[in-house]
Length: 114
Length: 111
Image 1 (cartoon, chains in turn brown, green):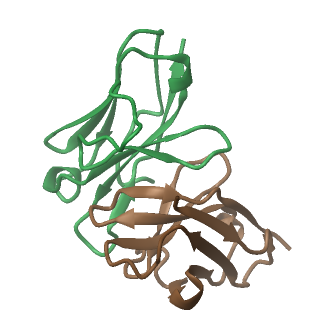
Image 2 (image 1 turned 90 degrees about the horizontal axis):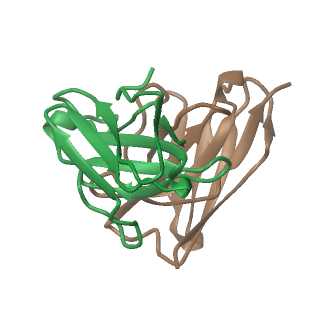
Protein backbone atom coordinates (compact mmCIF):
# COMPACT_ATOMS: atom_id res chain seq x y z
CA UNK A 1 0.00 0.00 0.00
CA UNK A 2 1.40 3.35 -1.07
CA UNK A 3 2.25 5.74 1.75
CA UNK A 4 3.79 9.20 1.73
CA UNK A 5 5.28 10.84 4.82
CA UNK A 6 6.47 14.43 5.09
CA UNK A 7 9.25 15.54 7.38
CA UNK A 8 11.12 18.75 8.08
CA UNK A 9 11.28 21.72 10.42
CA UNK A 10 8.02 23.10 11.73
CA UNK A 11 9.42 26.61 12.11
CA UNK A 12 11.38 28.61 9.55
CA UNK A 13 12.66 32.17 9.89
CA UNK A 14 11.62 34.83 7.37
CA UNK A 15 13.91 35.16 4.33
CA UNK A 16 15.28 31.64 4.86
CA UNK A 17 14.67 28.50 2.80
CA UNK A 18 11.91 26.05 3.73
CA UNK A 19 13.08 22.49 3.06
CA UNK A 20 10.84 19.42 3.29
CA UNK A 21 11.27 15.73 2.55
CA UNK A 22 8.67 13.19 1.45
CA UNK A 23 9.47 9.53 2.01
CA UNK A 24 7.57 7.17 -0.27
CA UNK A 25 6.85 3.54 0.57
CA UNK A 26 4.88 1.00 -1.42
CA UNK A 27 5.81 2.33 -4.86
CA UNK A 28 8.92 3.41 -6.68
CA UNK A 29 9.25 7.10 -7.51
CA UNK A 30 10.99 5.94 -10.69
CA UNK A 31 7.53 4.99 -11.99
CA UNK A 32 6.99 6.81 -15.26
CA UNK A 33 3.22 6.84 -14.90
CA UNK A 34 3.10 9.35 -12.10
CA UNK A 35 4.61 12.63 -10.97
CA UNK A 36 5.57 13.49 -7.41
CA UNK A 37 4.99 16.92 -5.94
CA UNK A 38 3.57 19.25 -3.32
CA UNK A 39 0.36 21.06 -2.40
CA UNK A 40 -0.03 23.53 0.45
CA UNK A 41 -2.90 24.91 2.51
CA UNK A 42 -2.63 28.04 4.66
CA UNK A 43 -4.45 27.64 7.98
CA UNK A 44 -8.21 27.95 7.43
CA UNK A 45 -7.81 28.49 3.68
CA UNK A 46 -7.94 26.56 0.43
CA UNK A 47 -5.51 24.30 -1.35
CA UNK A 48 -2.71 25.58 -3.59
CA UNK A 49 -0.80 23.42 -6.06
CA UNK A 50 2.93 24.09 -5.70
CA UNK A 51 4.18 21.80 -8.42
CA UNK A 52 5.86 18.57 -9.41
CA UNK A 53 9.39 17.77 -10.49
CA UNK A 54 8.60 18.91 -14.02
CA UNK A 55 6.15 21.77 -13.53
CA UNK A 56 5.84 24.56 -11.00
CA UNK A 57 3.06 26.97 -10.06
CA UNK A 58 4.00 30.10 -11.99
CA UNK A 59 3.35 32.31 -8.96
CA UNK A 60 6.01 30.41 -6.99
CA UNK A 61 8.33 29.36 -9.78
CA UNK A 62 11.16 31.76 -8.94
CA UNK A 63 11.40 30.37 -5.38
CA UNK A 64 10.57 26.66 -5.76
CA UNK A 65 12.72 23.61 -6.42
CA UNK A 66 11.32 20.07 -6.36
CA UNK A 67 13.69 17.17 -6.89
CA UNK A 68 14.02 13.42 -6.39
CA UNK A 69 16.44 11.02 -4.75
CA UNK A 70 15.54 7.71 -6.38
CA UNK A 71 18.12 5.78 -4.39
CA UNK A 72 16.24 6.60 -1.18
CA UNK A 73 12.76 6.68 -2.78
CA UNK A 74 12.12 10.19 -1.54
CA UNK A 75 11.61 13.65 -2.96
CA UNK A 76 12.07 17.17 -1.70
CA UNK A 77 10.72 20.69 -1.67
CA UNK A 78 12.84 23.81 -1.31
CA UNK A 79 11.04 27.15 -1.06
CA UNK A 80 13.37 30.12 -0.75
CA UNK A 81 12.95 33.63 0.67
CA UNK A 82 9.92 32.67 2.74
CA UNK A 83 7.57 35.13 4.39
CA UNK A 84 4.65 34.75 6.77
CA UNK A 85 2.44 34.16 3.70
CA UNK A 86 4.20 30.83 3.23
CA UNK A 87 2.89 29.55 6.56
CA UNK A 88 0.81 26.51 5.65
CA UNK A 89 0.27 22.80 5.90
CA UNK A 90 2.43 21.26 3.20
CA UNK A 91 1.26 17.99 1.63
CA UNK A 92 3.38 15.76 -0.56
CA UNK A 93 1.45 13.91 -3.21
CA UNK A 94 1.42 11.58 -6.20
CA UNK A 95 -0.17 12.98 -9.33
CA UNK A 96 -1.38 10.98 -12.32
CA UNK A 97 -0.97 11.77 -16.00
CA UNK A 98 -4.37 13.49 -16.08
CA UNK A 99 -3.40 15.58 -13.00
CA UNK A 100 -5.58 13.67 -10.53
CA UNK A 101 -3.82 13.47 -7.15
CA UNK A 102 -4.51 9.96 -5.95
CA UNK A 103 -2.26 9.77 -2.89
CA UNK A 104 -1.45 12.34 -0.25
CA UNK A 105 0.80 12.53 2.76
CA UNK A 106 -0.73 13.43 6.11
CA UNK A 107 0.64 16.97 5.86
CA UNK A 108 3.14 18.97 7.90
CA UNK A 109 2.53 22.42 9.35
CA UNK A 110 5.31 24.87 8.64
CA UNK A 111 5.22 28.25 10.34
CA UNK A 112 7.32 31.15 9.11
CA UNK A 113 8.17 33.38 12.05
CA UNK A 114 11.17 34.97 13.68
CA UNK B 1 -7.59 34.36 -5.90
CA UNK B 2 -8.31 30.88 -7.22
CA UNK B 3 -8.32 30.24 -10.95
CA UNK B 4 -11.49 28.15 -10.60
CA UNK B 5 -14.59 29.52 -8.92
CA UNK B 6 -16.65 27.52 -6.42
CA UNK B 7 -19.46 28.66 -4.13
CA UNK B 8 -18.10 28.99 -0.60
CA UNK B 9 -20.93 26.96 0.89
CA UNK B 10 -23.65 24.47 0.06
CA UNK B 11 -26.13 22.57 2.17
CA UNK B 12 -28.81 19.93 2.10
CA UNK B 13 -30.82 17.66 4.34
CA UNK B 14 -30.11 13.95 4.75
CA UNK B 15 -31.37 12.00 1.75
CA UNK B 16 -31.42 15.02 -0.54
CA UNK B 17 -29.11 15.76 -3.44
CA UNK B 18 -26.77 18.72 -3.64
CA UNK B 19 -24.70 19.96 -6.56
CA UNK B 20 -21.49 21.97 -6.25
CA UNK B 21 -20.29 23.94 -9.26
CA UNK B 22 -16.76 24.75 -10.40
CA UNK B 23 -16.42 27.43 -13.06
CA UNK B 24 -13.32 28.02 -15.13
CA UNK B 25 -12.60 28.94 -18.72
CA UNK B 26 -11.95 27.45 -22.12
CA UNK B 27 -8.27 27.26 -21.13
CA UNK B 28 -8.93 24.78 -18.34
CA UNK B 29 -12.27 23.09 -17.64
CA UNK B 30 -13.72 23.83 -21.06
CA UNK B 31 -10.68 22.66 -22.93
CA UNK B 32 -9.93 19.33 -21.28
CA UNK B 33 -11.70 16.43 -19.59
CA UNK B 34 -9.24 16.51 -16.71
CA UNK B 35 -11.39 17.73 -13.82
CA UNK B 36 -10.93 16.17 -10.40
CA UNK B 37 -12.80 16.57 -7.12
CA UNK B 38 -11.48 16.13 -3.59
CA UNK B 39 -13.15 15.72 -0.22
CA UNK B 40 -11.41 17.05 2.86
CA UNK B 41 -12.38 16.62 6.50
CA UNK B 42 -11.04 19.07 9.10
CA UNK B 43 -7.48 18.25 10.04
CA UNK B 44 -7.16 15.58 7.35
CA UNK B 45 -5.54 15.33 3.95
CA UNK B 46 -7.78 15.66 0.89
CA UNK B 47 -9.12 12.51 -0.75
CA UNK B 48 -9.72 12.03 -4.46
CA UNK B 49 -13.39 11.26 -5.16
CA UNK B 50 -13.78 12.07 -8.88
CA UNK B 51 -11.24 12.18 -11.71
CA UNK B 52 -11.42 12.80 -15.45
CA UNK B 53 -14.77 14.57 -14.90
CA UNK B 54 -16.91 11.50 -14.20
CA UNK B 55 -14.75 8.61 -12.95
CA UNK B 56 -14.77 7.37 -9.36
CA UNK B 57 -11.76 5.74 -7.70
CA UNK B 58 -12.32 2.35 -6.17
CA UNK B 59 -14.12 2.60 -2.84
CA UNK B 60 -15.86 5.93 -3.49
CA UNK B 61 -19.64 5.53 -3.14
CA UNK B 62 -21.68 5.94 -6.30
CA UNK B 63 -23.62 8.68 -4.49
CA UNK B 64 -20.84 10.93 -5.75
CA UNK B 65 -20.98 11.83 -9.43
CA UNK B 66 -19.30 14.36 -11.67
CA UNK B 67 -20.25 16.12 -14.88
CA UNK B 68 -19.20 19.01 -17.10
CA UNK B 69 -20.92 21.48 -19.38
CA UNK B 70 -18.86 24.05 -21.21
CA UNK B 71 -16.54 25.79 -18.77
CA UNK B 72 -18.35 24.54 -15.67
CA UNK B 73 -17.87 21.24 -13.87
CA UNK B 74 -20.23 19.93 -11.22
CA UNK B 75 -20.10 17.49 -8.33
CA UNK B 76 -23.42 15.96 -7.25
CA UNK B 77 -23.84 14.19 -3.96
CA UNK B 78 -27.03 12.14 -3.91
CA UNK B 79 -28.70 10.67 -0.85
CA UNK B 80 -26.84 13.03 1.47
CA UNK B 81 -25.45 11.49 4.63
CA UNK B 82 -24.05 13.15 7.73
CA UNK B 83 -20.59 11.84 6.83
CA UNK B 84 -20.64 13.88 3.61
CA UNK B 85 -20.21 17.08 5.61
CA UNK B 86 -16.76 18.25 4.52
CA UNK B 87 -14.93 20.68 2.26
CA UNK B 88 -14.88 19.91 -1.46
CA UNK B 89 -12.32 21.17 -3.97
CA UNK B 90 -12.21 20.96 -7.74
CA UNK B 91 -9.11 21.00 -9.90
CA UNK B 92 -8.48 21.15 -13.62
CA UNK B 93 -5.59 20.74 -15.96
CA UNK B 94 -4.78 24.19 -17.34
CA UNK B 95 -2.92 23.36 -20.51
CA UNK B 96 0.13 25.42 -19.66
CA UNK B 97 3.12 25.09 -17.41
CA UNK B 98 0.99 26.02 -14.41
CA UNK B 99 -0.56 22.62 -15.04
CA UNK B 100 -3.08 22.40 -12.18
CA UNK B 101 -5.57 24.95 -10.85
CA UNK B 102 -7.59 24.49 -7.66
CA UNK B 103 -10.99 25.91 -6.91
CA UNK B 104 -11.41 27.88 -3.72
CA UNK B 105 -13.36 25.11 -2.02
CA UNK B 106 -16.98 24.59 -0.94
CA UNK B 107 -18.03 23.76 2.59
CA UNK B 108 -20.89 21.26 2.44
CA UNK B 109 -23.19 21.24 5.44
CA UNK B 110 -25.67 18.45 6.07
CA UNK B 111 -28.59 20.04 7.88
